[in-house]
Length: 209
Length: 227
Image (cartoon, rainbow over all chains, first blue to last red; front, side):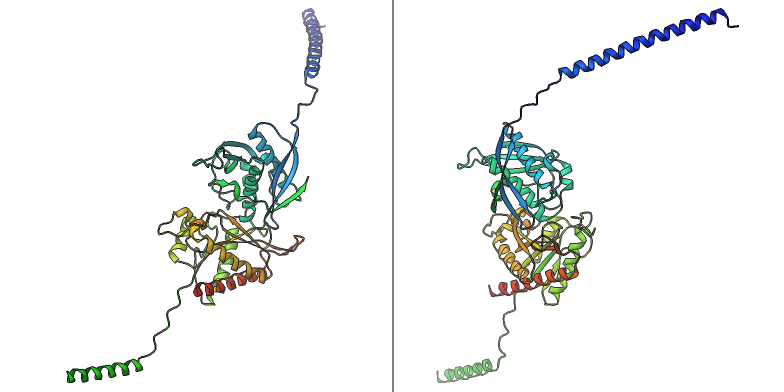
């Protein structure tokens, strides 16, 4: 025989469980409605993309140790630093493709920032508004770059030449890796010096792409 | 008066006899010809990693030893910056080259990128030699001679059937050398379709390149003596 007080407790607990189940169901429904409402408020239009423009890339070729000038069409932001980064990103994207003439992993993310500053040293009367480009490379790109005098020199010169081709006022280029100075790219090419953009001279004109 | 002129005549005759009997003067000694071989990297600095898994530092040392013996048997005085796996500062390498007063300084490198042999000369702007040169740009006074040396090396390598590319680059270490200096980077030999025809480990390829470099340096020695 079940005592009366136990029957009462059981009934109360059962009733409480049913009430809690109903409340939980309603809370779940409300959360679902909030989620749907949030999705509705999300932007459905694609963000505005910068218009595609022509950029000249000095593409390195390991086979004959040359820099080939190629014209590419790509969306470019208005800010000069971001623009330079986008152009170098495209150049390094070409190097990361499997059939690249100058294989170097990393791609477009290899350049963290590009800063355009007034050129170092005395003002050149011929180029009074000359600029220094400081290219900040990622440590991941540098540590995975193939080692060798030729391949490292070509990477550095193609970056310098590409910057000068698209920003004629850039006459000097310096390199940082993760924001700090580093001795060499991958054991050979000197990254402590200021490169003159004129050191990178394209050897041929590439096809329009 | 008569007596003194007679003595003078006797002395003159004796002098002429002595000069006729004297041995011919020895030829002027050939100027010393010294080549400095700098096997790049070493010690903790492994350099690049080659396809065989060998570090660049070991390969450059092998090539240095091979080239040293080829030059040694031809009577060329060779000074090497290292003979074993030791780390040597770039400045110390330049110091060794500058103390040797060498007529040719060759910095040896190796890479899997590209094909054939890559010859690099310092990209410093040529300057007139001066008594005191800045350490970091001492090579500027020698760039013209370095370019000439690279031309001789290029001809010899092409003659040996090796693909050659010539370039200029900023070369820490070499830029401080006060001698005609060229950085020589060996890469696998590839044909026009970029198919590898000889790996870096290929003994025949190593011998061919070392032989061509030795022949070029002997030619450079001849040119140096004629100037």
